[in-house]
Image 1 (tube, chains in turn blue, red):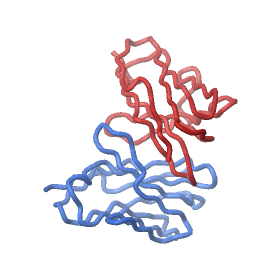
Image 2 (cartoon, rainbow over the protein chains, first blue to last red):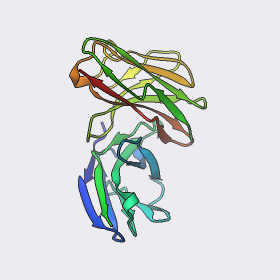
Image 3 (cartoon, chains in turn blue, red):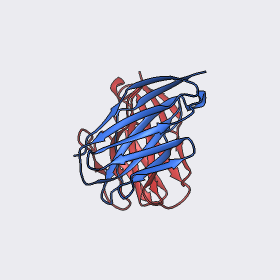
Image 4 (cartoon, chains in turn green, orange):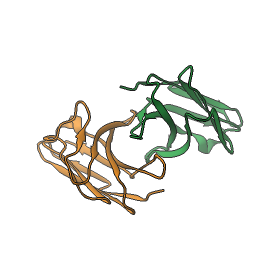
Length: 112
Length: 113
């Protein structure tokens, strides 16, 4: 089955800095890569996703890149704000199932 | 998107008892799932709730422990049976809508004493 590795497990940045979270996957059939943000005590929320037919996708301060050859994808957050503090999960899904395998999560802390 | 509600939001239960968690979606969806999330951990898929047929369980999860019902395309229940303290966790239902986007319910925080 699919295996998703996520790094780092904790990321601490100053407000205004950029943050990068990296994930690798093992199944070359995976073609859908969502990212979720989970604030403390809240449900995971989809913040951005990318499909295997594109290499990069951007939504305001958030961008995701995908390297299919190397089987890795990354989340980039620019101009971080304290409200970006949360746990971020990457995931990979294959075929038509859309059942993702999740990474272990990255706890992002943005210091004001 | 999809609006998902869960009941109860939290419960404290005695070991050996069972708890049934309800999940309601505001629109008909084909794919509905149940996850478990232990404190500080990632999301672990328990099973896919299939409408009109038996749920599909992931490795390590069995129907006798986690029976699931899916009577229609907007509703599902998960029962945690014969509970032990190790079952203390957050249980989340989720659905896939649109073109693969997954949405989660608010979760049920279960504590077993």
